[in-house]
Length: 186
Image 1 (spheres, rainbow, N blue to C red):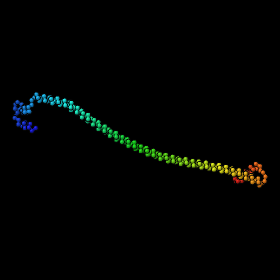
Image 2 (cartoon, rainbow, N blue to C red):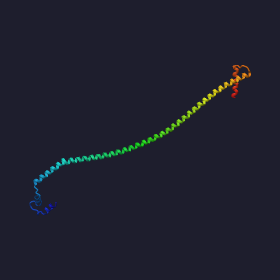
Image 3 (tube, helix red, strand yellow):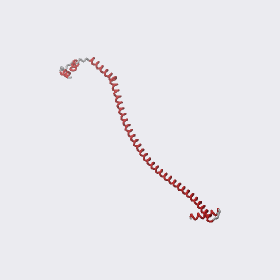
Image 4 (cartoon, rainbow, N blue to C red):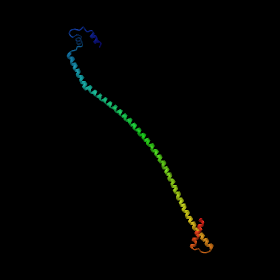
């Protein structure tokens, strides 16, 4: 750039035929028809590049920006869903733990109740067995007592018959048995 300033500084004073601008145009050998054609060519190339090169590239870059923005939005959405899923999972685990603790407590309670019920059933069963045993013993005692009474009555009758020396009738035997039993029971 320095040579251009040097050239402008060394330029002769302004003349009537175009002055300094005309001198610059002659120094750079600018010919108007060529200059205009070059400007038109440049504009055509710039328009073509904008339409066929820069336009598609900018559209592609815009699509990439949009995809990146969508990807970031989806990433944020996925992170939110993941956080929500973690909260839901934590809540489900906490609820499952509470349910498990409740079920364990219920199992302990029902086991204690069942144990108490079985103990009561065992006591009732033992009482029934004792009652049956007592009833059986009472029945056996009554049978033995009846047998003893009959034997005692027979012995008293036999002894009385031997002592008196006479043969007793069945009425006599029944009367003697009643009297002997009444004296024994009293």
